[in-house]
Image 1 (tube, one colour):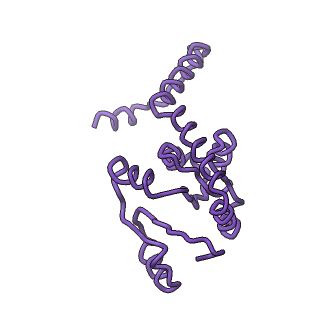
Image 2 (image 1 turned 180 degrees about the vertical axis):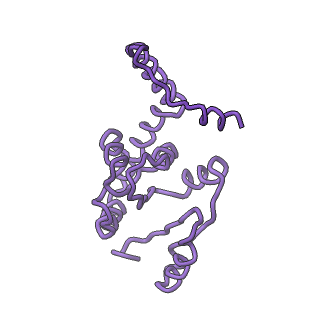
Image 3 (image 1 turned 90 degrees about the vertical axis):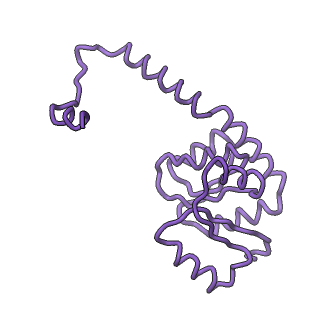
Length: 176
């Protein structure tokens, strides 16, 4: 138990790093605290686990792509703790549904987890904010808003300036 914080860490998924992770968990004697699980179906597996067994979604995602896992976790009522990347930082700023630490600063992440273990009210307040934000940004509403935005942009576009990237070879590929 690092920093005196009792914890369990359940990791879901699979990949080329799984065997090395298992070995490190065993080598460091973390088997009582850290468990690896294979992939689970989202709706019937990850959602119930997230809603009933987790307090916090920890993401060590370093890329700045718009990872949907953040919003999915928030939709399960989990605040997100992750690295300060171009997707999570604005999401946390606008939602108040989590925290960020500088990129690759695992010690700071551990310190934040330790602070949250001592301040359940803060954890619960951010969990509520995460869920509220996720409910306002469900997939259907976001898709409708994006389509409405594209329609407005298209209406303002001079159609004589439109060019299409479809080439004869691309059209042939689309037919096959």
